[in-house]
Length: 433
Image (cartoon, rainbow, N blue to C red; front, side, top):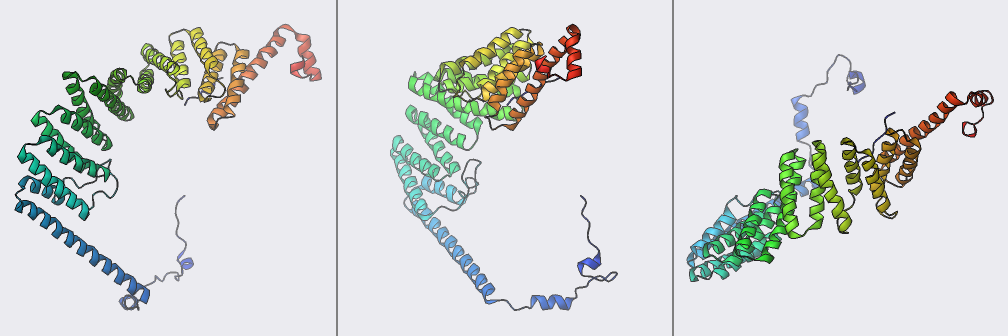
């Protein structure tokens, strides 16, 4: 008998008579009735409600007109002051729709008009940047744009923040100012992560790593590796969810290299686990065992590693050993895992391992050992919130116990006929024979 595995009416209208119309006589609605309905007197409450709506709409329109005049006067004042670049940026940010649509990572409502204080601050910093540009002060121009970028990022206007961080990048790159270019690439990468633009985020962090390596800046390189670990992992998960197995494996490989250079054991373990499971789906047993063994080693050596998937890793590893014809090694691997797990730890992993061991012993005909592990599986499953685990444990334990009884019964049939007859005649409990 197969074991139960545990891994993670037509609408009908009533007759016309029941709907208030006489049979054979459809109801009519004359133009005179319609006229009477539309001419019914409106209540005072309805009139008051309409008046309030009209007043609110008039107030909103007045605010829009006032804000438009404010934007216009601020823009004109920049031209009067002789700040053409500030005027161009201000006009582009307040009058075009290129930056106003809400991005995928932006908060709802961030595409609304800027309030008055934001307009004044925007104008002030743009004028400051324009003046610093004319004076040749690169760092001051950079500082003004950086201030605006951080301000709009805090407001949730990530597309506007992207615009200003790009200005920071262009200025520092054109001036050959390395610290500014490094910082701008980092900031842009973070903004693109928030916007879920993974490809652009990767490009920014890779450029930062390239600059750090070219200039032998070890601390900057380590920070870039940490950032790349995060974005490579995100890209791999996106590709895996989309069913792109090879693409996800490529991204996980990049994540492994970056995490190794960054010393990120948590990301390293996770990437090894995901790669192992991907190869398992492709039935590449040797590759699966290699990456799952690396995950198991990392989870044992680093307490900060998430061990919630350890049971799945050990079970899958044991299944691969079975596939290559090494069942004893599979049993040994699972039993070693159970010995290392404490009773107070998460018991999902031990439950999976006990189930797998029971199935392994059952398939070998060693039903008593199978019962031992299925009983332990049942005991653990009773304390888990997963009803499927309890159902599988109950089923497997019943099958294994039945197999043990069957072996004893067949022994009586083949070797001890008098006892079998006694059981048949007197109905002595089978366990007492």
